[in-house]
Image (cartoon, rainbow, N blue to C red; front, side):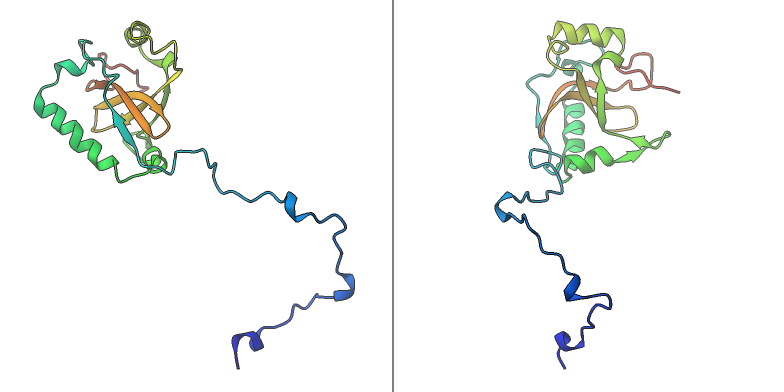
Amino acid sequence: MSKKDKRQPKINYNPANKEIRAHYEPHNRVPRVKEDPESTEHLTPAWQFHRCDDEHTLWGWGKLDGKAYLDIIKNLHGFETMTWNQIKQAAGGRSSGTNNHTLSIDEFVKEAKKRLEELKISDEYEKLFSLRLENKLRLYGIRDGRVLRFIWHDPYHGSKNGAYPTKK
């Protein structure tokens, strides 16, 4: 006996009650989409360093030595196998919140907002993306689709010298 022969008919099935669709138009059907086709959340990240602020005394890239750059590159390498959705869902830390997320420029410390104005970034963007590399090390940048354009590295996250204040 085949699988087709073993199927049981539906108990409540009554062909006489079957409704006929009067206005069925197959060419007007809209396909179901599970996610926005324009979304980049399913893509892996790409990095750009051309917007880096080299001159800032606390968060500038110019104060890093070769080893510090290498450590950052090694950390970024770990993110390259993940999608943006996975990166944004990564959680941990004391508050068990997400490690990587967008932040409003309005919420940064006064010195950071002033520097973003000098760099003409706050005129063009309202949010920066925060990427957690280590306990206190954050990279801040502009996320544009799958690309994250780095601006600062902040080794002082959670302290008085950090670019973004934390809630205790």
